[in-house]
Image (cartoon, rainbow, N blue to C red; front, side, top):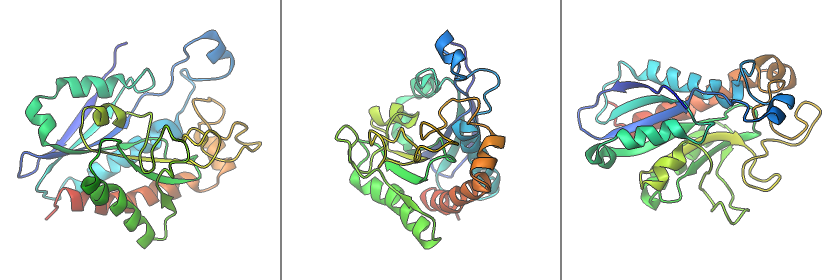
Length: 251
């Protein structure tokens, strides 16, 4: 697999950094069965997975570019996420021990639109003190704006309460770097593992839009969930911009 990772750096005064990440690849069919089921390929827009996440990351970069911060911010668009988080793995592999030590937090933006509500989840290894400053702070900011947001309730024993799963952040969590996963889904449905994003309806027969050419596109989402794309992106920005400014110690 050949992929490209795009990195933009906002330098801080100190050597410590925060990474904000969104994957820019969409799902590629792995078999004829995938293709027959309209999963992945060149016609997959990937509005939910993950054009919106990428858009929010770029908007954060735009809004922060002239703001001096104590800590650096790296904006990273990864590829190969759908093939097994390859871009994130490659990024971690290229980081020196000093860089890893200086990385205070990795924020991952993925699947922000179709899910019922926003979730902010920490890594399994993320220390409690960092969870309070990141996940819990994000939820407090959301509450202050009247935005429905929560964290994994831990109804599936494989996914402990308040932690996330199955995205680029996992690579950094396993390496002992603190993470914050931002996603929209519904951890109360299906296997309670965050995979089912919403109730099953005619518009979303399986309760999700995963990789489906017919469902994960702007036209379908606008029709099924009018105004959702714009509103959800705005909600994420209203939480993330103040949070990142706080964490990076903006002046």
